[in-house]
Image (cartoon, rainbow, N blue to C red; front, side, top):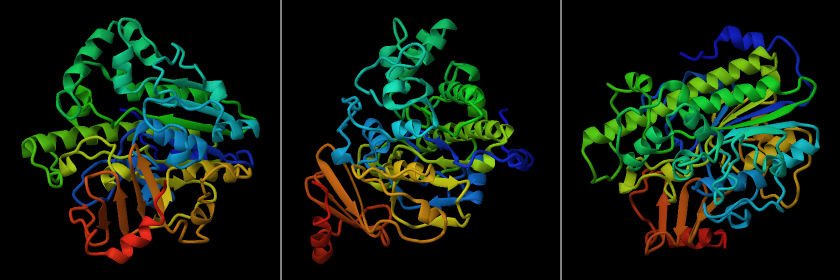
Length: 446
């Protein structure tokens, strides 16, 4: 089993001083619910490495994505811009090469910028190069291995591979078997194990690539590494070894769901947790590698996701929608300049990581960015950040002030939820709160 970051390896990693500017490690799974975290009541997911990061730093419990869909969310992060200005309105668009990224700014300032996994910055164009190097330099990376997401690999990977992960499966004679298996699963259906061995499972491939990139990163300059896992995105593929640890754990039923059996919902959540736990094991390996370089004390570590997952709440699956399970993201930050203090209720957005990373590197935040640095929050100098958050996708837009959330363009009628008294978003208070809805409407993005 891959190692968990222990106290001994943590202390070893802090033994040698690093460069003055901090390294930056961004761990970004795909489709991880904000409540699927250690200590959450009723959610028996085992994430020892994420839990250690929480103990060392800050967990933001009111973090959202600018847009709950893969390509727009990652474009907003790269550009440091809100959804309405990021230039990627859906998964049918590639990131505009004329738009500056925070990766470019870090690289231009002397950082060795690396990325691996599902970067999703050319979602429309299903061609990553067999070495995963296509467009990396243009986006601002010094080194990297970009690979397809789960279903993009299936769509593009037969009869010939278009990315390094499917090339690996072709080389090992497992491509056709994998594609057949994934096509049969249909999102949240199919909780049986994948025929792939553990070493060919995509998130384990991504972990190895992260270790490879760290191994060849120069020692004489600061680095930034973003690791973009493909899980726990559906389909619910887990290996036989992952399944052995997944069963015999009870989970709550989804909110307001009339589909499937209670047993199926539990199995779905067991598989989802197994994918999360496998990613946590990969995180342990990556943190141990940073510690082995003697750089952990000088590395800002961020754990988050591009968006959440409905997991059957409101009879919905996946993302796309403005409910908190889809809109919210986990966000944990630890490392230099971070005062460990448990949880923060400040309103923050995934997009704010762009300005935060630039600020930590000693760089100014461009005025073209909407991103705002989290450094004062991380240092414990303030408890507030934004007065409200906005997000959108396709025709709908929302604004959330930390209690009330107003949504327009999603259902036939506008919605207003009081998340303080109704965290599951079951009661539309549009008619009951005219003063609040009138105020929030003035803050909606166009």
